[in-house]
Length: 385
Image (tube, rainbow, N blue to C red; front, top):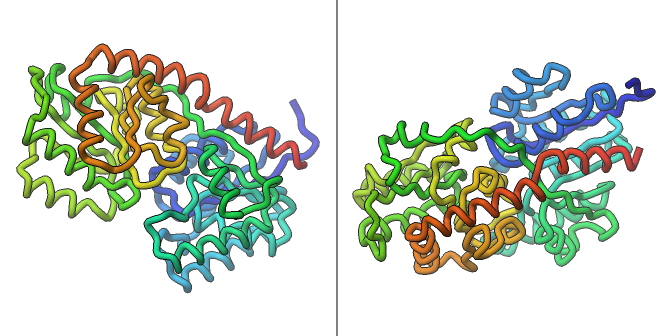
């Protein structure tokens, strides 16, 4: 099929390291017909996103911007803004679609200044939360409002984020829309994680895939693990109880110290960043995510696609993924007693784990699949051309 005009789209995200937002950008870029869409992805250099696109999608252009970094630096922000403006001014994109908080603000303002006709932003969880001080919250709120004023559409990945945007007046209501994240279903490759860690089939694995960063609160999970492993409150099964954390981040040294100080080596494993993490989840008995705040975490969707029951803190869009007592168990605050109770409930009930995993897989296939997500973004792009 021939198209009269290929739609030029710039997909912009701050970092290229392994993460949920990066996977969404990858799936959007890879899922659009290259005969109809001319795609460029701009991001920080050297991460998994760049490698995925270069190795698998030769028709997608990649622009690496060294000044896009996670940490805030006025000099880097100015340099990144000027590079983004020059890129957009030179290439005459029809659409600039920004992802992640920093790229979302810098990219939308640069696109507006460069005269890009349509400016989109996907909020993978708003970068405004109760753990920030009042001054920082005020600054971030007004930056989002400024960027929202020049946006054509702002996509929220959960109803929770959409309601938050409304309550904080981040963008006018007519600009808001909802598109749930989606993922492909991977073929089962069970056994590799247990072999790697020398664990038997009867051993229980409670696992998570998350950055070792304040948002994900890995130290709280380790506190829960220490209580459960050292106290054995209610666990009388044959196998050992083990916790696996896949991911890396600024809190890794503190996590390693906690594991050493509490004598948890051999029962708690920090595996670092693993590109095959979604496959390793198949070896978990229970997936756990005890975050302080969230958007719509892809790791929970991966766990559901793998047929794993989920125990999670009900923040952000988590409650839109996990149906309490049907596909997993939700706690309503970071309370160690509540988390321990929920985990032991599933550890001691293998039939419940299987049932919840089964219904979770069905729910993920129906509501959070990759084809639906890409199709909705495609319709969004075409609707404004």
